[in-house]
Length: 197
Image 1 (cartoon, one colour):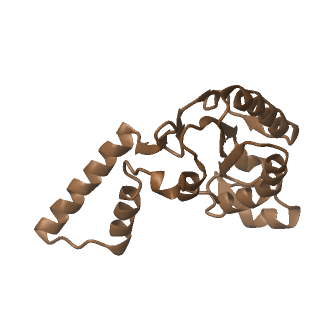
Image 2 (cartoon, helix red, strand yellow):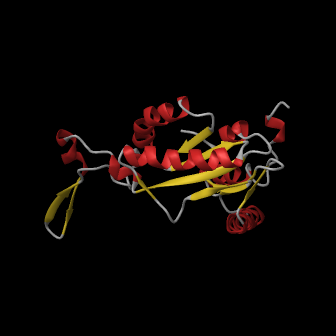
């Protein structure tokens, strides 16, 4: 799975970007008949089973990413654009705005050919130099990544809670600390240092 570190290493200052979002992505993975009983559930005395991968399984992202990788490799081999995918979100990058616009439409057509439904509301098919991807605002002109204002407020809130716990001597778990550190590491991070000019 690709992450924000890989994005920072892939983006070149001055790139243009578009982003695509696949609708109901996990439902494209059909579960083999012999495995379906393991995904069964009961509701109001009726038994049901999923025939496609459900969204709620902790393994769904891993299975989906594994299934998507051959498709994404085929698309990458035939293009001169940078493509980063994270589960059902896809970021396309190129130096030439018009070329990227044309290639974005071709990628949409290819994904539809493979049976995927594209979320037209979430897609940003017009190339821009500031794109929202994985919940962050990626400024491609001067290579700066910021969290969206709402995420920044949530982080500030989490920091205040942590500070209060420390002051009052309340027990803090390793998991709480790790979550806070993970959320903080990307904050307003300048990623020019990841590129050798």
